[in-house]
Image (cartoon, rainbow, N blue to C red):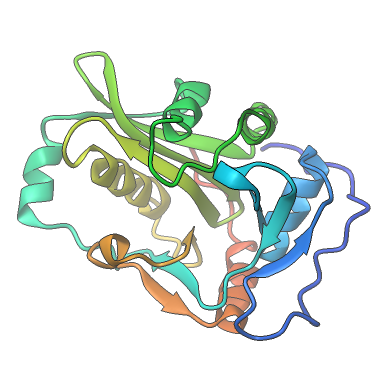
Length: 224
C-alpha cells in the first residue's frame, strides 16, 4: 500500500465554484502532495497555454465523464481484437506517458513538466499504466491516478486498431476483479467516442459523491 503524502498548502475546495464552470483555479504546483490532494478532491491539472503549456489550470468538469464498473460496452469485434493482444500493467509507465504526449498528436497537452510529475506519482505508487502489447511491441495503452477505488484516467493512445479500447477493457477487468462496486473510472470529459464504450455524464455534485464512496474502497490487489 503506497503511503499518502504530507498535506499540500493549496486549497482545492469546490464549494464556491459555480455550476457548469470547469476551470476552478490557476497556479499552484505539481508536487506529489498537491496532485494527491487534487485528485482526492475531484480536481486535476492541465496547462491552459498552447498545447498544454503553463500556466497550469486546475479543472473539475461539470458535467463529469465517468464509467461505472459493469457499464463498459464491449462489442463482439472488440472481444475478438482483444484476443490478439497481451495486456500488461506498470511495465513501461514512462513510455506510455511519452506516447500519450507525442508532439505529433492532434490536441496534445502533455508537456515534459506534466510527464515528469506523473512519473514521480507513479514511483510513489499512485499512478499506473495499462499497456497493450503485440509480440513485445507496445501498441497502445493508458495511464492515470489510482487512489482507493478511484481510477482517474489521464490519457490513452494506440498504434494499432482497437489497442486503446483493449487497454480500457483491461483496466475495467482489473478494477472489477474483486466485485467491489464502489470503484469508478473518471474520464474527465465525455466524448462521442467514449460514449460508445459506456461513458456517461453526471453533474459535478453526483461525481463528488461517487468519489467520496470510491475513496473508501481499497486499491485493486495488483496496485496495493
